[in-house]
Image (cartoon, rainbow, N blue to C red):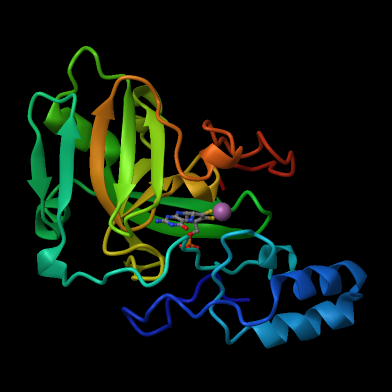
Length: 242
Ligand SMILES: Nc1nc2c(c(=O)[nH]1)N[C@H]1C(S)=C(S)[C@@H](COP(=O)(O)O)O[C@H]1N2
Ligand SMILES: [Mo]
């Protein structure tokens, strides 16, 4: 089983919506024996899944990523057009290009990636700039105690406490699985919050804003835990550090 789909063409659009009715899939999943589920996996294989509800993830698909987006087509900026903005309660707001980020110290990590809906990809290599490094450059003011992340998909948001954001295993990721972060995976720059569930790892990162007080992110408005530590929700994670 391959760990990823980095063999897909660079910059391929995030896939079509899953064409099978979600309700139908749910019903099949419930009645399905392993043969039926295998068949369904095969049917689903060529379809890049977008699964905002997480229902499709109930199907078995061990060890592979699913591509998630809560929006329709997401812009694909040319590498030269990418910008990351630091703003809010900081002494030095600023804007970074991809080249700026690439010129900063890079941190490598290998971690399991786990979606709260149950799928998990073991031993994924990540590389990028520690979020803490960018925070040091910006200099949070005394009032700042949280970070709000925004995406250039225009919709998804996430947040971390400043303490969480400064962890050594929280990256502004530029590389993943041995190559640049692909468009589908949130490239050219995404967040990777290694110790937390996948929903904290915001894709298509465009803004880092220092705030006073954590502002719950996109899914957290629907009940996901703001502190998305792996193992805190479903109890099946025995090896969060991979
Ligand atoms: N902008 C954005 N970031 C996002 C999401 C999303 O829908 N939009 N989904 C989150 C969820 S729930 C997971 S599990 C991971 C999935 O990452 P992947 O699409 O690279 O597999 O991205 C997270 N970051
Ligand atoms: Mo997820």
